Amino acid sequence: MRPFVPFMFTRMRVEFHNVFPLRRARVHEVCGAGAMGFAVLAARGPVLWIRQAWLSETLTPQGMLPLFDPAQMLLARPKDQLDALAVAEEGLKDGALPHVVLEITRPLDLREGRRLQLAAKAGGTTGLCIIPEGMGSNAAETRWHARPAFDFEQEDSTLKRWEIIKNKSGTLGAWHVRWDQQTSRLDVVSPVGERPGSAGAPG
Image (cartoon, rainbow, N blue to C red):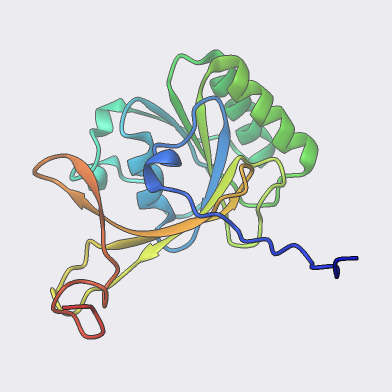
């Protein structure tokens, strides 16, 4: 009789191009210090951006010019999250704009998350919730953590670290990315310390 050998499970990693651009007809989430930039690059086209009116900070589309044409943004300012969810659901279901970005300030319950997913599926729309850390919904298709990744060797302040921390397909990954304004392209680059000539990198 053969001895029992427990199965060893390893979490598969996913290629960046398989998860970004974000899957259509689904609602995703992003948190972290780089969440706003992630949302802008995830939309990259006509977008309904929903931000509650009571929030003190003002979203300035002109500041997005290096990444995005602000003329393609429709900004909605509902009074609270309840109204914001209603606007998001209608926008996702309508499908007139291919992307809907929703800034949330309190956790979504499972019913609210499912309603957004059903609306995105009905409209074929990509939804993205910008969430405070720790406020993720179980209904989200993917959840990302976005933050700056400073490269002091090259004095590069445009480098970002994007990590997928929840994925209904079960695959996770982390990447360093940089927006190339000249080519209007998002490039995946080797992490700092793993590039040729960097300390600790293979020669």
